[in-house]
Length: 287
Picture (cartoon, rainbow, N blue to C red):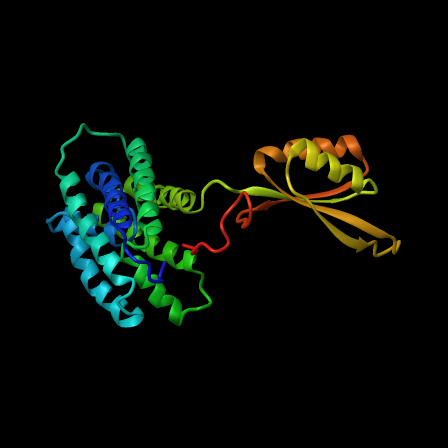
């Protein structure tokens, strides 16, 4: 997401839509319930309830020095789209924060707000922008602390904001629900960015590999790869079948193997990211 991506009309509209959806989650569900969702927006929520001024306004003010740091450290290629996203986010958040709605219990407010925030962030990132804030801070910190994973840095910073909200609002319920909002937003964001293409990778060692491959290709209509190997103890040559299938197809493949060769050796494991026909495009820019 730090590479240059030319902004088209589609990208501009998608960033606007994403920030609007994000702002609905913050302005209508999280901010009114004093739920700080981590990041710069979470700090904005805290300041808006203690000092005044809208959360969106604080979000913009806090992002100004961060964007300058980003420009200084990474150049201006990724800043233009991010500035646009930050402005949209600030305006939409302030707008929706002024809409007075019926009070909502903390749990449904947390779930609705965090799901909308995750969807909105995902759309912005897929359009080639970022929401500024912690994205840039984490990128800068990663230069100094290369041994700390990006996800860990995000979690540490978000937790710091959530804990700070507990001290400011003096309400442990708000802290717990804000932490839940951070987790749900992250999960939804991953789903929007990477989809539900989680699959199962299956390795089969069988003396009936030819029959198994034939049935896999004909009955399940999935691809298979034959690998050559030999037993470490017996030294006998073996053919292994490697398959990657959608999760819903894995039970069918298991049953097929049991029917054809009850003595087969089979390993099943999760495959979180798959590139190639039927899955992701290998040449797409990774977000």
